[in-house]
Image 1 (cartoon, rainbow, N blue to C red):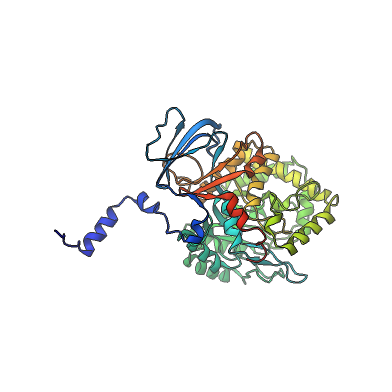
Image 2: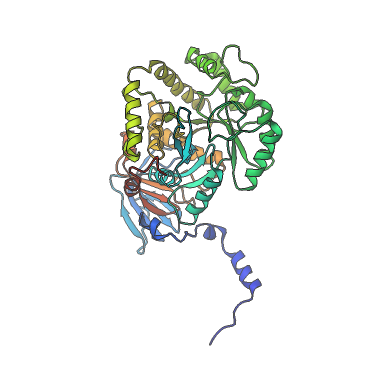
Length: 480
């Protein structure tokens, strides 16, 4: 017997009664192009006998089983105590390590592509989202956009299963006063224009704002006011504004560790960017200077987070030409460019190496004093920093700075989630959270470079084949 169809109101009521978590974890209808890179999307997965570095900062646990049901972590516990359901897909993880998906907060969907003699950047809408996911980044914030409409579209298409990539928090176009000849860079003209720009892009789905080098204190105050009344956040790669001034004005985050601080520039003038003077100030500053300790204490008192972006500052001498081993991702012309630049800079960057070493120490001091240190990479600069490859390199460099692997992973996972206000959902391997996980064929606690041996990256419980994605993007960076 046919039953009568429920009314529209009844259907609506039934929909509203569904648990919110069940609705949130509904997987997208992956296209054949994306499904090709999925290793598993079983509704129930048991990852057995893994070493688990859970992202909370707690010591790693051996011989653990993680149950994932419908995109969420259902249970985490010792192998002998967790009962694996008969209908689960079992993945034996003996000799392997599980970490949370990376949460990276200074990423871009563009890459360094000069315009003649002028520095410029070009969007990489195909290669970069793929590379981020392959490199273990399941959530990113684009800390500055040149094509925000493209970034927003990529965010949507990834969520719909049409493209491979991480979850994306899209930052609005740069808030920068005229002063730099970068063709792709957005410029504003005063605080009123800054307010209009912030409101326009917030209405279209951007979730944060980035002040740039020539922005003034009045510009920052205007953007902070507009953003905070919408519960959105403001970060900055500053120069004209000092870190102390920005903290006083309510900025939420500062980019590039202390490498963009102009607080120690000799003769610093308000609202004036003198980048050489700012750099010289940092180079003169002793590693354990009381002035830096004072600034660190002030930033922490104002609850300002600091984004570490170590790859973009890594010296050349004795290090990889492309960080994290990503040379093969570039088109041949760019491979030639980066190799030549690397060769030309060997044993000529002692000043950069000295400042880099101090930066490693300052970030450790900030963290150890109780500051919220988060991770990013900034795939611009000289072109050595490439999405995905550099995300893993960032964690390695934190270990070089003196952090333990467990601490470095927490900074690059849970700390980022805390800043985004999403730590109840992502950032650690705990029951009830979204199943964003990375399976590593090795033990990064014994050798942090084993982090590069990523095998499967789970995003919302769907396991993507890391090596296969990396392979698909070889020779693509620089094209799209």
